[in-house]
Each structure stands twice: as C-alpha cells, then as structure tokens.
Length: 428
Length: 101
Image 1 (cartoon, rainbow over the protein chains, first blue to last red):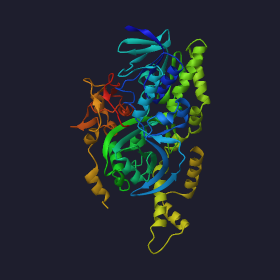
Image 2: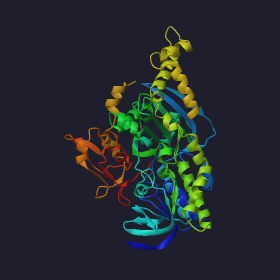
Image 3: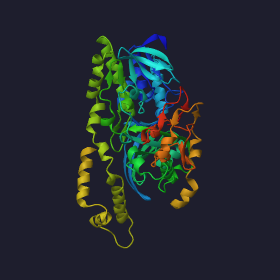
Image 4: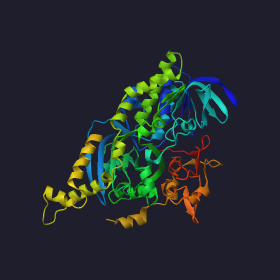
C-alpha cells in the first residue's frame, strides 16, 4: 500500500452540506483540510426536497443570504389534505421568511467552494474505500490502495454508510428507519411560476400534500418553486412502501404531476431532472451509539441528524450545523493535545447542547406518528367530505355538526378522533 | 376538464423517457452485483417496484438488473429481503451526475 507523504490535520469524506461546511470551518480556523468527494463535482450526488431553513447557516457563513445560491424565499406555505380529486388546504402567507428554495446540487457546490476559498483542498472524483486505522485509531482514509493520513477524519458520507458499516460502527440500514424521496424537477419560466402560484419575483412556495398522493403509504408529497423550475415529488416510509406498494413508485410521482388538481401547473413544463435519495427517518435508531471515536467524528445524514417535524424536514441546516460543530470540536481537541477519543467527546457534548440534538429529542415521537394509517387516509378523506358537504350547496344546506357526523359516519369514531388529535398535538 | 383517465392515458411518461433527462458517466464495470439465485427464491421482490430508476425488471419470470441507470439512492440495498444485492458506490467520478436536484 502506498502512503501519500503529505499529512493533513483533517480529512473530510463527502462534500455534501455537512462535509463541505466542516471543511469550510476547519480551513477557516487554519487547519490543513482535505475535502474528498466521489462525484464529478461537489453536489453532483446531492439531492433533497427543495427547501432550506436559513438561520443556522447565517451563524456559519458570512453574508450567506447575499452570496449563497438562493432561488426563492419561501413566503407562501401550503399544506393540503388530498382525497380523490379534491383537496382541503391551509395556506399561510407572510413577508417574513426563514427558508428558501434551491437545488442542493448548487448549494453543496457553493459550500465546497467556500471551503476552498478558506484554503481547504478539494479533490473530486475520489471514492474513499475505507477508513484507515493505525494502532486502533482512525488516522486517514484509503483510496484505491493509497493511504492518505490525517489527524482526524470527519465522516460525512451520507445516509448510505458504507464506511461506517465496514468499521462495525453502525449496522446495515433497516427499511423501517428510512424514507424514500423521489422527485421530478420541472422547467417553467419564472413569470409562469409567478402567475401560476401568485408569487412575486424571488418569492417562493412550499406545498406539502398528504392523503391520496401515496397510495395510502405513510408519507406525503411536496412541491417547491425554484427560480425557473418546480420541484415535485413524494416521500414514503420505505418499509411500509415495500409491504404495500402495488405499482411502480415512479408512477406515484407521475400521477402527482398529472393529478386533476395539479395538472394545470405542470402542463407547459418539461422534466429537467429525475432524482431520488434515502432520508433518515428515525434518528433514535439510526444514530451511532456515539458520534466520536479516536480520530473520527460523524456528521450529517451519516449520523442520522435529520429532523422530521411531520409537515416539514430539516436536513440541510442540521447537517451543516453538525459539520460546523465538529470543526469547532476539533479545534478544542487540538488545543487539548490531539484528536483522541477522550478529547473528541466534546463534539457529542456540543451537539447535545445545540438545537440539533435538542430538536431531535423534542420531536423523537414523530416517526411513530408517521406510521398511523388514519392520518394518511381516513382524515384527509373525512375533512374533504366535510368540506364538500359544506361547500357543494344545491337545495338543502348542511349545518357544521350535521356535515361532520355524515362525513365520519362508518369511518372513524369520535373517541378515535379525540385521541388522535391529542396525540398529534402532543407529538408534533 | 379532462377526466383523470384521459390524463393518465395521455400524460404519464415512460420511466425511460423521464430518465433520459438525467446525466451519467457510466462505468465499464457494474457497481452493484445481484445474486440472481437468491432472487429465484424470493417471492416478494420489492426491488421491482421500489427501485426508482427501474433498474430491476422481470424478464421471462426472472429478475434482471442493469446498473447503467442507477441513481445511487441505496433503496435496493436496504429493501432486498434475501441480501442478494452487493452494493458499492460507482468508482471515482462515475455514475449519476445530478445538476438540478
């Protein structure tokens, strides 16, 4: 095995939001940092739904909101419950915004460039084959039989944790702990997007749909407006999908695009890209027992650090912030004499004290809620039946109570509704 | 207004046509190896419906896998009930190249 002479302070595996941010912060603090990416460019293996919450990123990158590749600021939020050819929608509009739409391919690329500007060395088209160990300590990586050494390795390899599995740090993923996201990006002119969705230039829409969009499989659908395209896709719990799906999954996305309620938005668009990714769904099961080892820290999706809030995901800000904390933790460890396991313990501690772990703990029961069938089939049906009774007036009109009783007749008992409401209000 | 069936008939694209919008740098060697003997024992075959790129198809009653259109999501690796899928990332720089995701 060849050993490459140069020795780095840190090697970061994967130039997604977690890895690129770790590399950026490490380089900024003056550490010799090597950022390795298996794709042709940083971001070329990145995929997400479409929205990023900005606040944590502003702590990390200077002038983030001016420099980052932001497509549109989300100023319109829609949540729809879909049943058959109808939908009941809550829409919230405000000039205040805390999130934006973009392509993660672009954002990862931008973040990696920031790391390079700070002095990190970025090598693309490098697939790390395994982590390198010396005397039981992680001290670099192996790439095609060549060893590249470093004081610390930051594992930002993403949800498919081939390296960590090889080390026996995590077990193979279970279908019940991940969700599958599949999306189409549809090209539309900015003016067309503005007119269709009632947006100004730079204003964006986030639209979550639940109910009759996933063939009854727990999950949902999403629509995000980008500058000159719309991202449209579905997310399904993988284990449930495996048990229940009775046609090809891409059909669900195509049916969404051609849904009687949505068809008008996409009829003049053409598909620019089709992409897919696994999503950490159950952090309590996915998270390695600890996120630090001698010479190693684990960040981002690889660490299971993604928050499912039921009606929204927070992945990018959580990933980036964990990378940022890992870099800060290395600085502390370095000051204490090196990246020993004992010294890197501070990473876990800092993460526990940050919003990342606090929020993951707070929402830890959402993943159980996601498995409740009634939320994805019965309630969307009930609420749309109720709405149709109230809205589709011919001769006789319904009183609310009357419409409600008729809508739920034979579908769900009052006691169940009250119990479910209570559970949702507690867990969400 | 068009009925749903008409929309379906007219507008649901074929997966091949959807995938035609993507860009790959296909390796000469497959990064995923499927042990078909295990597929023959498998009645469930969730890969057929869940691989988003439809890399797994049924041909003459047997599973056929082709790696070229793989989007590297890892679904097959996670759901295969027979552990028939030996899964690696494509070699350096190869495989899917997302641009607008």
